[in-house]
Length: 199
Image (cartoon, rainbow, N blue to C red; front, top):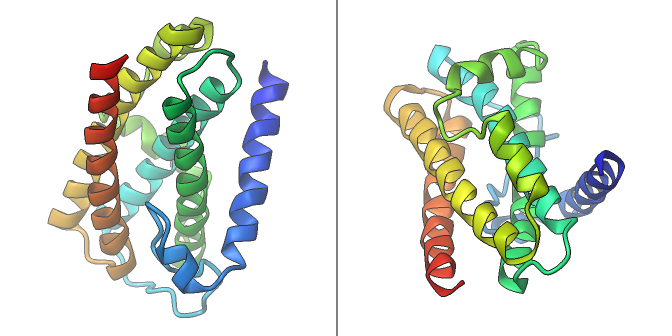
């Protein structure tokens, strides 16, 4: 299972790298796309504690979403609409992780601090080990339902984190990403709640 999940995550990264080679206009068309080039030399290096907390917390938050999406894509009998949503989450959030890691490098912040900082956000919609184990064990329609329920909670936490960044951050790039996350994930919550009502 771990190998298959890793393979899916690697495939998602490869897709993300191909997309990163596209024009900024192409990136902007993605659901979560910021239209930013992580390799650009014009990264805003002005940041405060709120910006650092947002980025180092959102990276592990996004990484868990990728694990959840890869997990559900590894199952049989999942509703095709849920499969499509999971694929979109993989395609959208990996480039955002790459972008945020590029900011940490430009800011001189150790990217390895991300997991430790992310623990401060344990109440921000993150799934517990038991939650993740339940999703891994679920099959078919139950997996579809559980993934949607958990991802609604997960997205709600991300929106709360992004709002804190809007309220307290100062880095323009991070503020833009926070607004993108709020807009995109609010729309996805509406979509997931509609799907839950139809399952």
